[in-house]
Image (cartoon, rainbow, N blue to C red):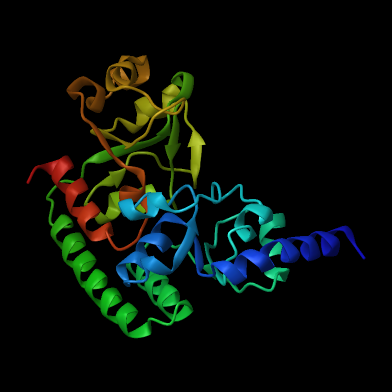
Length: 278
């Protein structure tokens, strides 16, 4: 028997007693957890991951760890009968073990668009047997997001916005294209001030000066990745930009802003209002 097979067998043995006692859904991914609650199935959850911070009721559930750094033991120890996981969950070794376990694992594709949110809602609904409710929720969320995006698109002049993922030690990591932040800026009627690369990458002072953002967008967070507004705009590269000179720094809850779930339409409206006024 290979090491992986041995590990799988051990994990299944670990999960079996708990499954008999509890059962239910483990939700891995903040938007997935929100969708489960929005479909009225929150009482079927037995655990969630660290990114699942909304609604407040989710915080009372056992936490199986950060979605990109999961352990099979942590996920299976709560005895799930179904695992719903964001397609970006990992590491790959953990997902491979979970896929070989007896517990069904459904990976939900995460894409940053209205169509992606709709597909996510429908996929969760199908996985938990709530297709009718999912159809209704998907229709409502799609309509709300279309309305919010259409309103935001009417802004006569798009503001250039720099999304900063991290400012640890004064080293700025910003959003390029094909990210949740980039998609949210577009939906809210703004333009990503950073061009020329995909994903989140460190940016130089020269790149920030060249970007000349009108506003800076950040997640509300704490710890090493946080940067108080006064410290941020004191950085020479930021201070020289229009955003730094006008202290135009917007901070929003990370899951609300970047989750692409049931609340995204309201997040688009709130970001648009913060950028352009009511």
